[in-house]
Image (tube, rainbow, N blue to C red; front, side, top):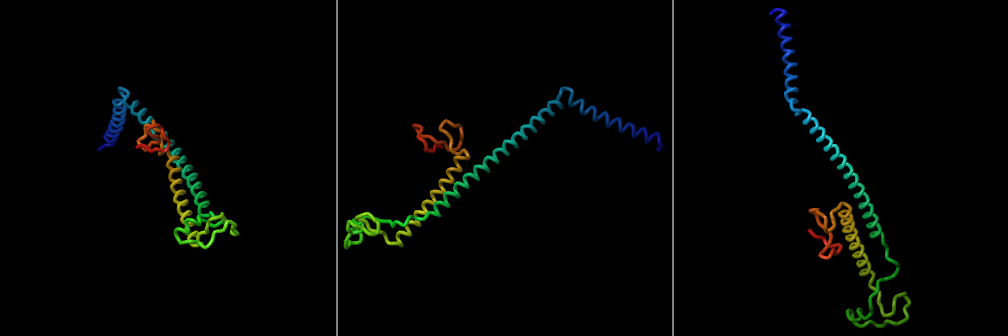
Amino acid sequence: MSITTKFTAALVLIVSLIASHWYTYEAGNRNGANAVLVKQQEADLQAWIDSATEMSVEIDRQHSVNQRVSHEYHQETTAVYGYKPADRRLRISAKVCSKVAGETKTTSAARTDGGAAGTVALPEDLESRLWGRRKEADGIVAICRGLQNWARANGFYRSAGSESSGPKVGGENGAAGTILW
């Protein structure tokens, strides 16, 4: 094969590649299809960027809500478990004691232990268990309050007229606190 034949074959190949590229681009763009496709792709890309921006803002909002609710919960549980009752003793009526444990010897009107007349102090072990139960109950209330604050802050409670598929607040007469599904 001579150099002229090789050169001619290479030239034909290059011209056919250029022609096929031109034909592909121009044939697809005869009625503006490429321009429409490019605009559609640009619109899709912009919608994706906008969606990513909105998601980033929502993630940041949820993070700050979670931090705030977690901080409030931590403060409340610290207050609950750090609570120390005053030096006052828990007292019940002497009439209740006399019915349960039999007659008491005396309940004078003048008390020296600071209690009200006609009352009896509970035994210390019972009193400490009652204070423990109180702390336990207050801890459960703190957990529930934290969960409810989180649910409210993240939009799980909606007004009765809202078109949300989640729970809605409001009753027959718009009573607050009633959850409707």
